[in-house]
Image 1 (cartoon, rainbow, N blue to C red):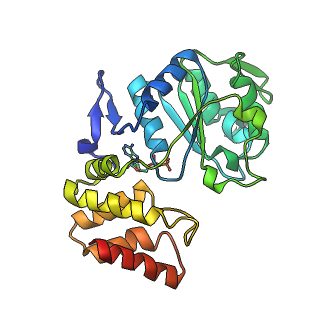
Image 2 (image 1 turned 120 degrees about the vertical axis):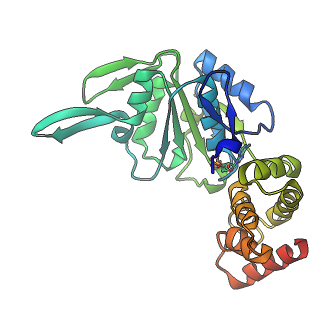
Image 3 (image 1 turned 180 degrees about the vertical axis):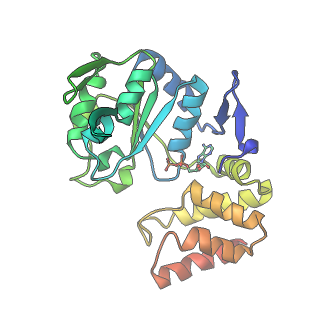
Length: 270
Ligand code: ADP
């Protein structure tokens, strides 16, 4: 949820989405941008990777092209293709090509999901050549200085079949994200949901306990995103048990016994 309370004003007129840094990641991003280095962000789902990229793109005043990668995503989906329009075939840029042409930031979320041919188009863009050859249209684009490529993946989902090849990984400056400390997470929950801080601290502390259950009973741990959902329900007056069940238990598991265990932990908190 982005509303005006969660948006910071940048030095210019543009609105910058709220992002609470947890370390020196903003300086790293900015340096990578200025030096033309591609960036890889690793981290669990819902921990703030996308928000970070949105925030930095706005801060740097660059247009952002975000692509959520999936297993059918091909290189042509990123670069572009000829489409039939009114009896004519016309070249249509894909999001990567648009970002290169206009000196924007292209963010490929969950890059490991994409088809293998995607890495082939990324390689010449991620070394000192910084070029994008468009085989189908015959063009060869040179990325302007303001173009930046950012990719992310969740190492938790990784398996042997879906991992980035070392030759691809080695082309990126990389940073690992994780869930923030309870104090910072509470700040984020409060800013995003508008729920009073003391209740947000309770939620962040609860999250820390729930996260210790990873690998024991749950495939995925509770994300900052889910905590914000829970806080939003609470702020609207829902009963804490119902809010926690709907935002923290049901989205994470189906097993009745595990659900019961989570509910007991939650009831002990509220
Ligand atoms: P990811 O891309 O890692 O899956 P998101 O960036 O979409 O996760 O984060 C989920 C939500 O959590 C965001 O929409 C935002 O509300 C919130 N969030 C997480 N971390 C932060 C942060 N450091 N500052 C501000 N908001 C955050």
